[in-house]
Length: 187
Image 1: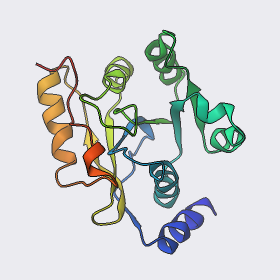
Image 2: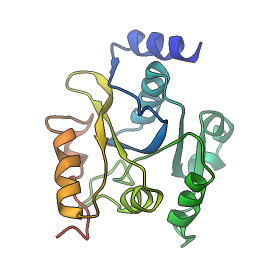
Image 3: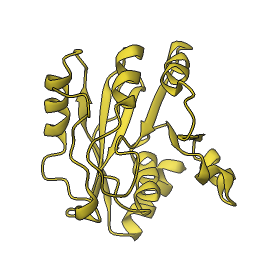
């Protein structure tokens, strides 16, 4: 039923879902570009349409407001970014519990213009030994989906080149806010 609702919702707004889901249902799904408040609802519809059972993390304020129950029902968990909570270790522990877990997050960390991606997704995927699933929202072609899986090698430069290739030509709703696909610690 959810898959049908995802396809229907996307069709109603003129979008379509594309891509393949990781076979074992495990990985860190990164969403790029994240330049608009519309990105999350479109991404949720896209994951539903593709049959992806994703959990996601987002800023705590989304879960504190009147719609917090709704974000939790979609698989969301809030993270207070103002405090150091060793979130990477906590999320790796969730992968260590076994079973399917596709953890979604926006590595840009914000809808506003910035310089670098946050590196948490990379550290989580490396420590949990799961691939990075390159999720995208392309407002130019009105497609949402998965552009590919990247198994990380530990060579940050090589891994990020492979991730960047997944997003070639992808256009955010507000391109002027689109953050470059690079990590602060990248050589």
